[in-house]
Every structure is written in structure tokens, then in C-alpha cells.
Image 1 (cartoon, one colour):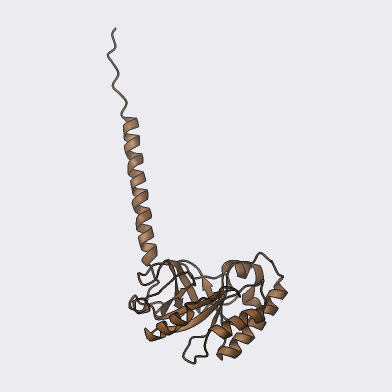
Image 2 (image 1 turned 30 degrees about the vertical axis):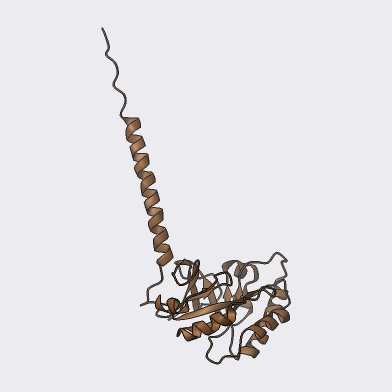
Length: 234
């Protein structure tokens, strides 16, 4: 009995087509998610007041454009620690005000440096301005020098007292999840909290927050690179 030539199996071809379709879907889905992420902000009905925080690395900023993109306020980094003063701070400070934004200064805290030196940098950079928002102190990365909690709380309280004496307002503490885990700042210092959490409101502190960085990847064409998009609790 003769047997004719076998027909090639169809399954490998079907599998390849299915794999290609799946890969294409992943690419399209990733691109769609990226575009959604770069433009997302929380509902204005839930959070009517929203704004940005900008770092020293973001170059020249079109502040009128920032206002036109829906920001109500801006926090402008003064420096990183004690040795990286932002030379553009005076221009950004004046330009944000001129654009009609509420404006405030944010100092990035360095637990490895003396509080008095950091306060001096803040005081000599940020003018006294009764119209400004309360100053913020950013407690971000856990330092490599690894000081103990008592030391961090002592130095931080010194910095807070000096900054508040200069500004005439209580500070905001902008505390990252890592810094809160390491030093339990929300339990040790009684100041208004600004917390972080992409998409989802944060709950990692011992107390509730007043400001929330809802996205650290927001893109607006008035600023070079991603900005922190920040909302105020209603």
C-alpha cells in the first residue's frame, strides 16, 4: 500500500502568527500605557488644586506654559544638600510668580551634612516673601552615611527651626517611602506631610497627608523632562 507525501502541519504557522500578534499587542499596549502615564493627572473633581515640583536638572522652564497646562502652583528646588545651589532659582522664583502661579521653595535634605549649613544655603537663596507657599524639606534617598534615627531627628528639627524662622511659616515635610521606613519621620516630627505614590494615594506614614506626588513621570511641553505632578488634599 503506497502512502502519498504528508502535507506540512499547519500548527507551527498558526503558532508563529499568534506569537507575532501577541508581540504586536504588547508593543501597542506598552506604547498606549506610556502615553497615558505621561499625560495622566488625578481627577480635578477629587483634587481641584494641582501643581508641579521641579528639580535643578530641568533647565530653562516656560512658566507661562506651565500655567497654561493646568498647574496652579510650583515648588522649586533650591539645591541638593549643601553644595549644589541651583543658579536658576532666582529666575524660576520670579518667573513662576509672574506667570500667576503660587510658588514655594523645596530644600533637598542631606542627612550627612550639618543642618546649620543647609539652613544657611536656604536662607541665602530664598528671599523672604509673604506671598510664597510654605517651604518644603525633601527627605528622599536614604543616605550612605547611615546616621541613627535620633541624630536625623535632632538635625532635622534644627533645620526646620532655622528655615521656619526665616520664612515665617511652618514647613512641609516631603517624605519618601524609603526615608519613612528608615526613620519614621511621621512619628517623630509634627509637621504637615507631603507623600509620594504613583497613581495610588499613599498610606505609608503614621499620619495623613496634605500633599501627594501623584505622578513622577508627568510630561508637559513647557518643561524639559518629567516633572513631579502634585495634588493638594481637598
